[in-house]
Length: 423
Ligand code: 4AD
Ligand code: MG
Image 1 (spheres, protein in one colour):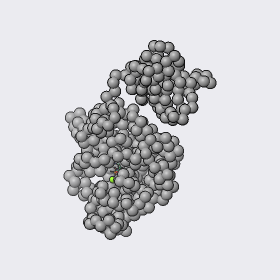
Image 2 (cartoon, rainbow, N blue to C red):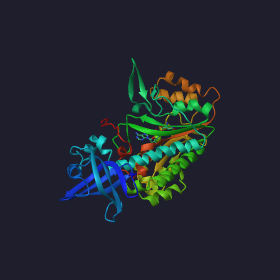
Image 3 (cartoon, rainbow, N blue to C red):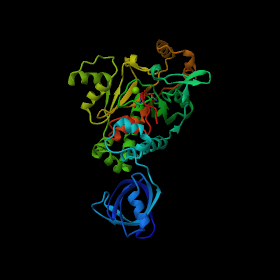
Image 4 (cartoon, rainbow, N blue to C red):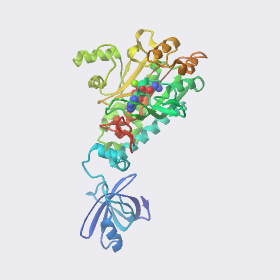
């Protein structure tokens, strides 16, 4: 909106709603800042402008001139009394109307992205991404980029996306981690946010095939150091969203008081073994020690917490090859997951990194990996290795939780899942 003089303003945007009766047209105009009701009365503007206002359909792009008046009945409390109505482009009938199926809306994603809901999600997402950069930069971390095309797996071969690389085969990055581990021996504290890819076979409301991960890696830090960084990061992001996106959180139906409470709480740490105890004793489940926690177990566990929880020391055998055993409890690994409240699942996963080359080789061989592809990684343990640790935060998982979304697909503009890679 541009102010022309004390009384007159110019507004450019799109028609969000329109209805007319006789000599008056009510248009709700939207732009990136929100919506405003405009009242177009015959006689206040040229006849041609009035006829155009009557004719223009939803999503037509327009430029208006008029006076803003307070009006308690109007959405937002103000209305524009229009004196000029210029149509930039008359829209064709918009294919999206009320009550259409989620699949139809996903087919129309290029248009649905303008909806109030997705606009608010994308604004929150922008705050989240900005906050992640600020968090690490303010703390002296360097931004470090890893390749997206990688010859090796890190989080299990079964979810790799194969890519034809000239006449050879390579894979899309599952994580930035292995390359980050090469860089901590010079930069010490690094972070990154980038696209990651996983051929997830599960069709859940939490899994995407392409998602953004914000990762950190630091020399000299152990498991408990990085757990503290992760907690501080999540709270930093929450506070930034609370500061900048109250309007959007209201549109999304988020409980802002609850978010504020969480941003000021301590997130507890429990061990995997304790989590199993809670499930078996308080939830009447029969979870065997050694089994990974599935969605159902994570959700039941979260009945007992109202903030995110950090779970440490998962069984070593079900963990990725690079997670070291805990000397105090050798059946478990020095690793952690952070689980969000209310069924949003694992938002962060991380660990200390192993320096036991023989153990890592054995684990990789067991899963059929060619060790030659990892020799460069083992070199990192031979030339001045130091204890180091890191974690990855799933940007869409966090955005889903903060935005109170039912499905992770709405946390990213153009979702890719097992069943969808269009538009
Ligand atoms: O727990 P993950 O697999 O950890 C790693 O990839 C480590 N290499 C990170 C590190 O230590 N640098 O993934 C990290 C986070 C998960 O906690 C989850 O939030 C998110 O990434 N994530 C997904 N988000 C959406 N769709 C998927 N398919 C996801 N898989 C993992
Ligand atoms: Mg994980």
